[in-house]
Every structure is written in C-alpha cells, then in structure tokens.
Image 1 (cartoon, protein in one colour):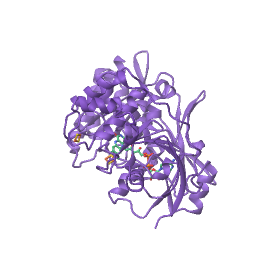
Image 2 (tube, protein in one colour):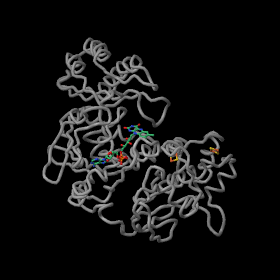
Image 3 (cartoon, protein in one colour):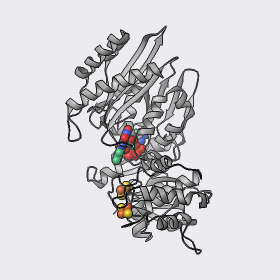
Image 4 (cartoon, helix red, strand yellow):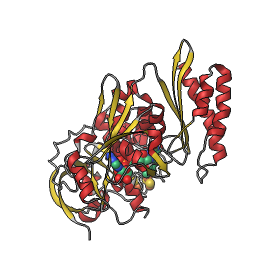
Length: 447
Ligand SMILES: Cc1cc2nc3c(=O)[nH]c(=O)nc-3n(C[C@H](O)[C@H](O)[C@H](O)COP(=O)(O)OP(=O)(O)OC[C@H]3O[C@@H](n4cnc5c(N)ncnc54)[C@H](O)[C@@H]3O)c2cc1C
Ligand code: FES
Ligand code: FES
C-alpha cells in the first residue's frame, strides 16, 4: 500500500487539509474520495479533456497529475460553477444553445470555457476553438458549444483566484530546494523518480508502460524555474512549462523557434503542465522541443550532488526513450547562446489540424551576410532518437541560391532517418521533410 501524506489546497473555494496516497491521481482523489463526480474520466491518457479541472486558474488534465501535486494550489471543478442562485451564465448558455447531448464532455468544456472567459470577456470564434482544442465532444459537434460560449461571454463575471495555502507535503515527496531534491535522488535513488508536469509518466502508468515506480515532485524547486538572459546566453529552467515558454517575451525575441515549438506542442491542458525538462528526459521521437533546441545550438545543463555538466542537445539522446541523464542527475535547464542575426522557424505535419504530435518536423536556423547564407542548422523531428541534425543538408543550403535549395531538398530525403510506424511511412516522412525544408527556407527569406 502506498504511503499517505498531508496536502493543503483550496478546492471550490473551501480550504481543505487532507491526506492523499502518494501515487493517487488527482481525478481519482476528486471522484472516489470526495465524490466530486462531475469530473469525468475518459481516456486516462491526457487526450480527451473529460477530466479537465482548473488548477490556479489554468486548465489541466486531472488524469495526468498526482493529487500530491495539487498541494498548495487552488483547484476548481465543475461543481463550483452553480450556486444557490442557480446555474452560472455559462451553464445556462449551454442549455439555451442545446450544446449538451450525453454530457460526458460537458464539465471539461465548461471549465475550459470558464478559464478563457476569466482571462478575457471579448472573444471570437477562433479564441474559443483554440481554448477548447484539448476537449473532445463525440455528440454535438463544436458549433453549438462555440455558440454557447459566445452567448455567455457578456454575462460572465471573472472570478478572482484566492491566495493558495502553503504546501504541506513532506519534502521527501516535494523538495523545496535543489539540494533537497538531489539528496532525495541519492538517498532514495531507484525507489523514486522525479515527476514534473506528469504528462508523459501519468499516461504511461495508466497504460501499464511504467509499473511499480513512485515519484517525487519537482514543482517547488526554485532553481529549476525561470527564464534568464545575460549578454551571451539565455537560460531556460527545466520546470518551465510549454505555456510559459510560448508566452515568454525573451524567448519570443531571442529563441522564437523554441516559443513556436512550445505553442504547437499539444492541447492547452498539456501545455499548462508539460515542462522542458520532462520533454528532454522522456526522449520522445516526436518531440517538437528537441529540433528547436538543436538549431539554437542549445546545451542541456545536468546537475548531481557532486557535479555539473553541459551536454549539447544533439548528444543528449542515446536510444529511443533513453538519454545520457544518470540516475543521480537532474536536468537543471538549457542554455541557449545568443547569435546575432539568427532567423529560425519550425515546420511540422500532424495527423489532423490543430494540436497533436508531429509525424515529421523540420527546424531551420540561418544567418545571412550580404544576402548569402553564412550559418545554417537543420534539425529533423519524427526520428527515433528525438532529433537528427542534418549536416549534409546544411552544407547544401550554405551554397546559397535556388540551386542550393534544390540540392538541399534532395539531400534531406537521403539524409533523414525518420520513423516508419503505424502513424506514417518513412517514405512519406522523407518526402514531407523535403517539402517542410522548402517552406522553412521560404519563410526565413520572406520573413
Ligand atoms: C497525448 C500527448 C500528446 C503530446 N503531443 C506533443 C506534441 O505535439 N509535441 C511535443 O513536443 N510533445 C508532445 N507530447 C509530449 C510532451 O511534450 C511530454 O509529455 C512532456 O514534455 C513531458 O514533460 P512533463 O513535465 O509532463 O514530464 P513528466 O511526465 O513529469 O516526466 C517525464 C520524464 O522526465 C523526467 N524528468 C522530468 N523533469 C526532470 C528533470 N528536471 N530532471 C530529470 N528528469 C526529469 C521524469 O522522471 C520522467 O522520466 C505529448 C504527450 C502526450 C501524452
Ligand atoms: S481522461 Fe482523457 S484527458 Fe484525462
Ligand atoms: S455531449 Fe456527448 S461527448 Fe460531448
């Protein structure tokens, strides 16, 4: 039986102090222990959005987060919407627009809509579709739901978030400093692994790909947070979420391809939780972050109790899902050198429009001097080792002009070593790598 620990949170406006099992999902804690069954459990893998709740005002999938990680936060479930006076304007609008059939997706849709309208009252169709892109409805179609949110917008009053309580969980499950976190790794190494956003490990536990492993949470370690800039480089902390990276002004200005990768990587629920460190450590084949970091010549900063080392991103991955990260090490963050005049872009092909893992992606970084290319980096995602740097393609592009581009488009077909799996053939991926390269060069030259 897993250990129980104390947590403190504000749940639907009430201060709650309680015990949770260290391996308990937030969705199970809400539904089974507290009988807040408005939160639905669908896929259990972070894909459908039925289990959406708000944590500190942001949408998250409660199936992909430990209850332990709600310690010191403000959580809102669908039960918070109605009051003694009746339904909230959003709920009324869903009824008025017939935006509900079986109701399975409705709690998640309502909370994702609330999160949007709490941020901005004037919304357009496209804002709503974007905010609801992590929520699947199998019955009504999305037109009525979008109409309901548009109808509710003028009547919605944004709620102010209360100050969250101090976290209560013990530091061997939620360390408060880097030193404490590294000590947990050494003293309890093998027995516990770090967890950050949980968007990779929680679905893997649900699907039985990870068994018998318990976790300690990195969210309270201040050394892993933040984005800093000095004269020569940017440092992005490992706990930076995709949502933070997408909105970062410093990244937008100096490493826009990383902000772009974070913006397209998955649903709003995932972007609010998934971290840069988690993306690197899980070594996924379809990562958007690894190709972006490769064209930026980034290095991964690793730290153990006795050592610190820097590893270039392209050398960080060893085999599918395997990296150079040792059992006693944590990823502290990434360092990105500032390069004057660097232009970057990322192109990707997904199964359907909107957020979703890329079948193939191409990141490109180039500098130009008097109209000629003077520096070039090409990185391909959708390959078994998370990222492949395409050095021969880079050389072809550096020869410049239309002839250089045509040659590079041929070279990348031979050089790319893409996956060949149920989502796509290697042949299709190679052809698309060539097309994405042409589009990327066009975007840089025109942009
Ligand atoms: C349905 C789905 C769709 C997705 N779509 C995309 C997509 O379109 N584009 C994309 O790029 N990615 C996508 N992803 C992957 C997503 O980017 C990763 O799940 C996420 O980045 C992992 O980060 P996390 O913080 O949630 O990691 P966690 O799940 O918390 O951890 C993952 C691994 O990293 C380790 N870890 C975490 N932080 C550290 C650290 N600081 N030091 C050492 N080890 C650490 C953990 O021990 C664990 O082994 C998708 C995932 C899912 C489930
Ligand atoms: S149950 Fe599908 S995202 Fe959580
Ligand atoms: S109303 Fe049935 S899934 Fe949306």
